[in-house]
Image 1 (cartoon, rainbow, N blue to C red):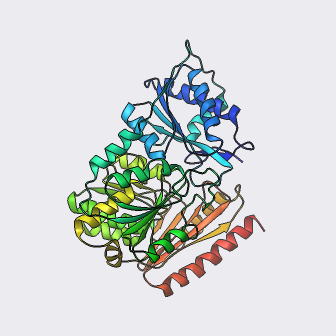
Image 2 (spheres, helix red, strand yellow):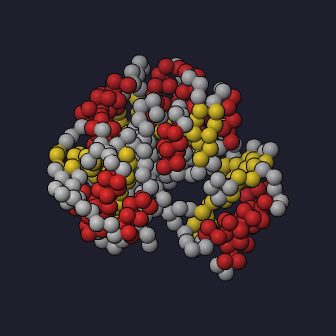
Image 3 (cartoon, one colour):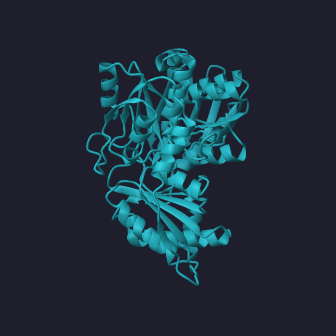
Length: 448
C-alpha cells in the first residue's frame, strides 16, 4: 500500500510508516523548499496520537539536517498549527496526523505557510529521484506556542451577541486542546463531551459520522441546546447537529453559510462535483457564481485561492472560509453558524427547516485498486454514446432535469462510489437501481 495519497501521507504506524521514512520525507521537503527559493523556515506540529511526537521529532531532524530552520509548535489542534504557519510566514507548515482514521494510523499533511495544500506526490517524486539533500549548515529548532494568539484571533473575529447553549464533542482528539477555550471565551454555555485528550479514542471513533456521534445527538435531544458540534480527530472537519438532534450534511451547512456570505457580498463559491444540486441552485439564486472542482478538500482550497472565492464547500464537511483562513479549520464552521443564528434571531432548527433538501444517497462498491479507474473510464466511454449532459471532471457525472448521478473511484481505498440525488424519492430509487446495476456489471467484467 502506498502511503502517498491524493491529499496527504498516511499509513499504519510501524507497518507502512515509521521514523526512517518520516525522516526521509523531511529531507525531501527540504529539497522542495530550496528548489522553490522559499524562506528556509518550516513550521511543524502534531496531533495527539501516541506515535505523533516520535514522528514529529524525526521529521524535524530530516529538515534540520538538510539546512532548514524549524519552528516546532508541538502537540496542537490542526487549526492552531496551520494558524502558526500563517502567522509566522513559514515556507511550509507540516502537521503530523491521520485525521479521522483509527489510532494505529498516522501520517502527514503538507501546506504552504498560507495554508494551501501541497500534493504529497511532489515529495514522493523527490524521494524516488533520490536527490541528495545538500546543505552547508544544519538548521535550527525554535519552540513556539501560538495557541493563545490563535484563540484570541478567533475571539476577535466573532462577536456573538446572544448567549448560546451548545454541546461540544471533541472526540478526545486534538480540538480538545483549543475548542473549549474558544467557545467558552466567546461566552457560550458549553457542555463538553469527550474533551479530554486520549489517543485511543475510547468514547467514539475519530470520524464524526452519524453512527459515531449518537451520544451528541442524544445529549441535545435530552437538553435545551441551540446546537452541537462534533470534530474529527485533528479538527479539519466538523458535524453540526441542530437543537432537534438533526445532523446537517456538508451540503446543508454549505447552503446556510453560503446564503449568509452571499447576502453580504457577491462573488464566487467553490463546490465539488459531488455537492448537492440544491446547494448549487440556492447559491445561484443569490447571484453567486458556482465553480465546480473534483472531490477533495485540496482542490477546494486551491481553487478558493486561485479564484478569490468567498466560500469553499466539500460534501464531506470540509469547508473553507477565506475571510478568516485559506485552510479548512473546522472550528470556523460552528462559529459561523453561531454568528448566523445570533444575528438572525432564528434558531438553527428554523434555518434548517427553510432549506430545500432533495433525497440523496451514496452507495459504495468494492473494486480492486488496480481496476477501479479502468471501470470508471469504461463507463465514461459507454455513457458518452448515450447521454448528453455528461461531466468527466472527476469520474463520470450525468445530469438530468430531476436529478444526477456521479460514479467516481476513491483516491484512498479500493472502492468506487455512486452518488445519486433526485427531486423525489421515487426518481432517486429509479436512478439508483439503473446505475447500481450498470456499475456492478462493469466491475464484474474486470474482477469476476
